[in-house]
Image 1 (tube, rainbow, N blue to C red):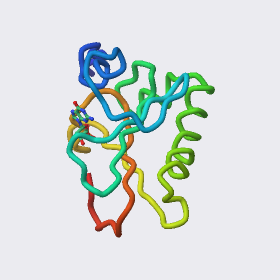
Image 2 (image 1 turned 90 degrees about the vertical axis):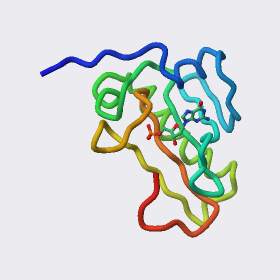
Image 3 (image 1 turned 180 degrees about the vertical axis):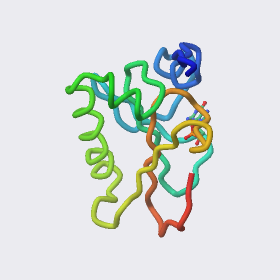
Image 4 (image 1 turned 60 degrees about the vertical axis):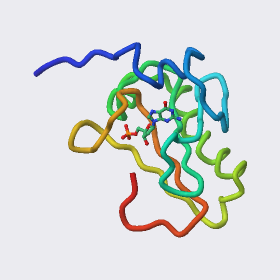
Length: 121
Ligand code: DGP
């Protein structure tokens, strides 16, 4: 089995370092959320941990409890901030090649603001 290594130069790492611009939606000590550059819905926000985790499995296995808690709490805070809590939203995480993951820094897609189709992101 090949052991993947986190690429410190991936695009989300660069956003976290402030080297690449993002439209910030939410930030706390452990989490950053910003608009997707290629939106698939009226609201399309990427929520990422500030820690260097490659994907959902990596995050769930290695992140500290306080990082995991902050990450999941951020979802509800973003829904409230965007005013979509009542109308609804969708969260999706692509994992690995078959999952269609392009950026190897764990993230979830937060989609809202319109009636969503069956398949998105
Ligand atoms: P995924 O396929 O799940 O790895 O999704 C990666 C998402 O990242 C994709 O929807 C497009 C988005 N993305 C890629 N590069 C950038 C960037 O430089 N800025 C922003 N805001 N989003 C990006």
